[in-house]
Image (cartoon, rainbow, N blue to C red; front, top):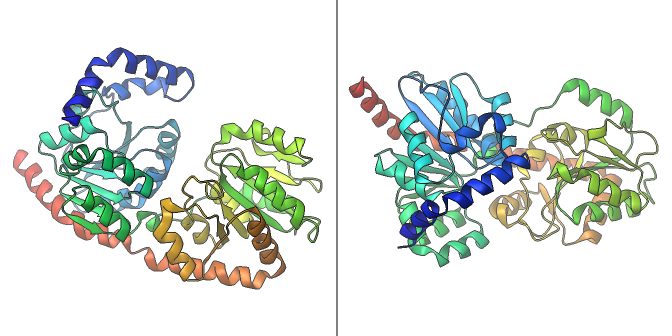
Length: 429
């Protein structure tokens, strides 16, 4: 009933959807040069042979797909991989990092004409959906065409679980389209089963298999030379309210470390001007990366309001606080800084990464703080006692390294699906 109502709404709401897309286009949220892809219209030809379609929402999912994509295109039967995402930023990332044998398209907007145009053109042999973004029309139409589907790296946060419980019949209908759900944690397994998924397996988190974030070595050397030996810490992927908290930390810690440098990388770089204004009003000397302002001896805060450079700043700062966690927003991925040898700190709101956070903490690799005062104390202690910080960083790195076999678990479960698809392709040929 709810699924039928959704389909009716997306059909009747065509003018509103069109208006909404045009607004996004004007705001730069859509890719003008490739806008037709959002309507299911492709310019590229479908590759011959086996085609594996992988869909994820945005940058985080796209990054966690990369080791799987590389594993799949390297198979002896040389399948092609079609990757769909929905954001301009993720498209840019895929353009830079997809291997040969993989192509990117924007996911079609979830209206039946767009969905059918997409599926008619690409005719994927296998569909792998990433994490938690389930577009009802696209899911149901894919399954109706007999395309085997798997939900990979699936996660279900407590708030999402509560929302889906209100739409239990829709959740059951959508999850029933997937032959297998490969969930990140035991808690995710329980939640997906409670919502009606049948074949649910704990896989682990594919983010463990993602290579360390890259950086430009020349830029790294240049900034490191400007920083010199100044004590440095990083507040990464910060959300509104956390930049002000980082400045509070800075003011207190610099009493014992007068040449302290604080680096802030906001989750949304377009907030850079607003953040810089706020920090300067509070008395901070701020250098803005997007304006090419260099770090000098007077710089208190280096505001890195750019995209795709977290790998650079994780390498520059031995102490990393992961944002979205002092505010009640669910936390951020602590695996990435751990892979690059940082001593990692997170706030109390980490439910999006609950099991990882608890396991990394139990392994001695993560410090959880309750508020700004505890964050201040943690940063100061790590600067005062670098050997303890390094020990925590080593424990985090070893924990992440141990968990990285998640790719083997994935290949174990996907192989039968691929073998069956290959046989169908041979029969079709």
